[in-house]
Image 1 (cartoon, one colour):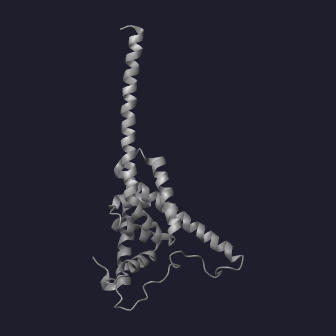
Image 2: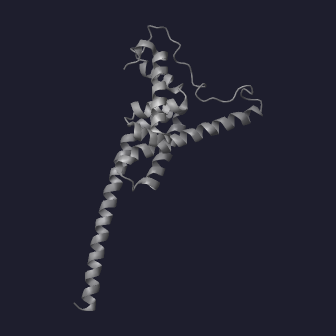
Image 3: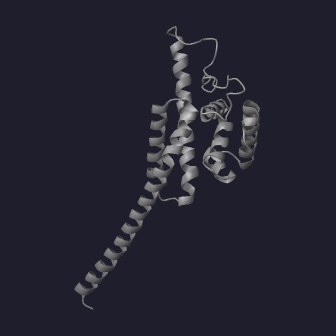
Length: 205
């Protein structure tokens, strides 16, 4: 084979390799897009319960999606869910920290309550003050459950929602939360007991 033929052959091989790589990248991007589309609604609900602000929750979800696509698109697909929720959880925690700072700053301007530190969970509206007959069997069941979840300590809420709503196993939940599997089990167990105490017989198994 002459020099020209060798170069042409090498170019053909290189071009074919690039096409295969490009096709794989496109397929991965499509799978990532499907994952994000499937998880978006649940993630929004997840964030909304955590911070009680739909607009901010939507921003946090979008930021988490962008960070996942930018930093972890090349990770195995089975790692996307825990990675995504870890990013989202970090966003939620940052949001609460910003709110705490904002609350303390507002105290200096005569607004807010200077006698108490801002507690985003405690600030959630009390929706459990209902008569016994207005139970989880009513049309307001979901609101009541979400309110109870919203009052859980942050770590318990995270463990409960990731295990129950997102279906992550203990290992995946540990990755999402950035804690040990033993901690996940402890937080989840405490969350379940707290919800059972709060909701009584209406809390299902």
